[in-house]
Image (cartoon, rainbow, N blue to C red; front, side, top):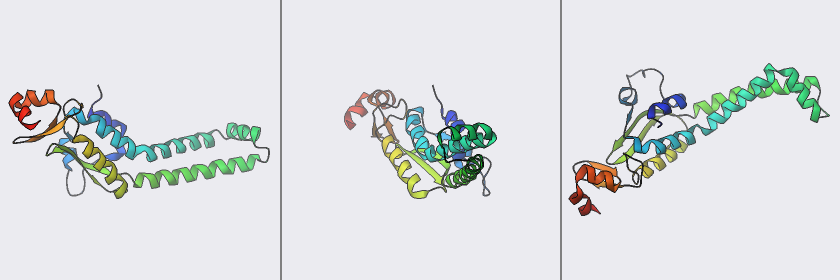
Length: 187
């Protein structure tokens, strides 16, 4: 079973590596403040946010390989591009590598840093600094709305039960937590 720590390993650029100047963020102190049922929602949000950055990393890796293996790169290109020359292929590979480095840096600047991920009033809340604000907000808003119909414990379809604490649960976990009478009254 995957855990929230797996997300820290898979998406390290989405979190502060050290303390912020004004102190530690709630995330660095408490980690993920929700149960495992929302793992897939959070994981998919991170994957969506990370997609362009991951693609830029792959492009950079490709061009690093091409430049590190120029003889192979030249040989391949000359086999299908009859107008290319050794010098033009080498220059193109180096230019593409430089462009890939720049694109990766630009894309990394669009990544947010998550400062808190928690349950509040029965729903997921994802707070972040920086990044491409409008795009990140759209993704986190969608994730937050999905949590409102997903059991926080198991990830099955759920609803928000309102007692002293608001909690989004499937019927089984709601009965386990609140008892059958409370669940029947809210269904």
